Image (cartoon, one colour):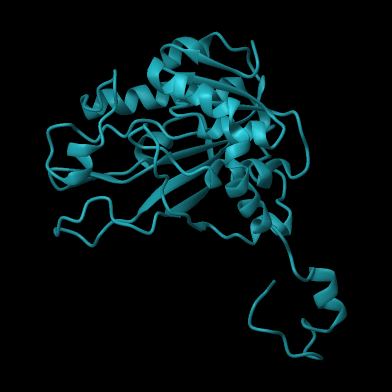
Length: 278
């Protein structure tokens, strides 16, 4: 297994070449199978190169379960996989990611709402959908370990709703902003370094750039060479993205600890607490 490399090829084939229990963290956003013949701005204008985003839904979900289970195999026990997807509709029927995630080997630790702040498709049959899901999936160390390690307060305070605008000026049709993998990596590892972070659908390399900037190792898998080449250029010039990364890191702070609040009597009625927790 070679670190700090983007493997160009089929995601399942590459995953199967990786050793068991070898990865510390995985983050990805796969193609959504949105259907190229549907109406709407999002479908007509967001198209991948070199791959189809329209296969039978049963085949798509089966494929995603296979990918999820291969990532589960390579992840170390006690480690996590953050999987970004969205709710879709097919002829009025809701297709929810939980349908196939729950059939995989993963334990679902949390559902995070990514509030993109803009509507990708503003047709009027439903309220404008501005959110996507990020599933925090966990590989237990044993049958009793369904909770995992506790987050530090400076990370947990960011809540389960992430208001982060989408990425712009990127040749990939559906990149996520670098703040997302930065938040995940820093929250899970804090000041630890040199972990191994995997993105099985690396796209334009956003996860990999965040990993490198935070002094970790990375492995990316990408089928389309054009996207992989762009990701390699981003990695060479990762310093250009440090301002956004540093801004995200500044959000991870506790202004007043639980111990300090307790000492002031905020939990005994001796001191009137402020309206905010941190």
